[in-house]
Image (cartoon, rainbow, N blue to C red):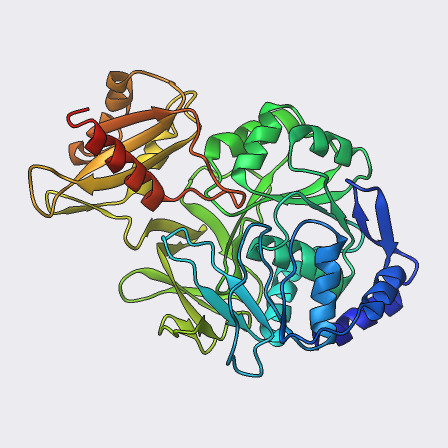
Length: 423
């Protein structure tokens, strides 16, 4: 199914530039890319593992499609999983990002992958007239669905940046105009700070982590560029997209459901997604939260007139004196403080009381004193929401997908506290 669709795309646009790699200067028309894919030797393995950020990734994907093998995209440093005994209809496997501490495999059919691409293309109005600029990983679900699949299934040209650094973006933006540029908040912040964002961007998209309201507003005010928030998941592809043209005023708002995607809430308040793009199962251990066209997220949310709002995450809620506290609500209040652009809040076990957690706030930079930050929060939130511990750092060290793990930061903070009791 996927390879046949690709061949139709290539036949319609044989002389049109399909792929460019700015690091090497090489480029391929759709006809050249199709011919090179056809000439690749047949694989004898039941799977292929595309890696990297080059034409090789695209060609290895096409080889897997052509030979009806299981395609499992991987980051460069990731060891490939052993894939066996999968149902015959499964042709694609994703590795989840593991922000909850566990990385799992998610199994897809060809139709499910194609449905995700179709939903994204229809919602974002992706077209061959607006090339995609790749600054994020092609192997991650975000990059694969927004960059690789639109190229191969809808003929949206792809230009691979030499690196995600600001200088590379500056050079890329002068190569062409009318770009669609998907990225993560950490990249948008770095590019904006370095004044690397110029004209020529038709659509700016941010996913992988919450997009700070302050950054969204600053970019819009200075550059008249709207960064569109995009919510997705490895298990079901695209979920919600901010279609508006003005900056959001509520950080919990992630957008409205993609075309052909239905979002509801479960009895306990978790977001549920139903669409033809939802994966078949986790592998090798299925879970009732995934399958039969339905995926129940680990995020709590609300469906309002304005759109879909995230209100917390399963396992992230802080238990303080019997009260359930959302760390996101504290983060959103902190981000209203002047010159505070990044923070992370989580709970740690209290040393003085069982089943009670103390609140930790990790702050990037030194936007104010602890006393000033406490006064700021005290005016916005109930007293039991105020952090007990304040930790100032230079960076939250987001990964290449723009994600920050509360689990990792909690472990790091507890390790430091155990080495320096009372500190």
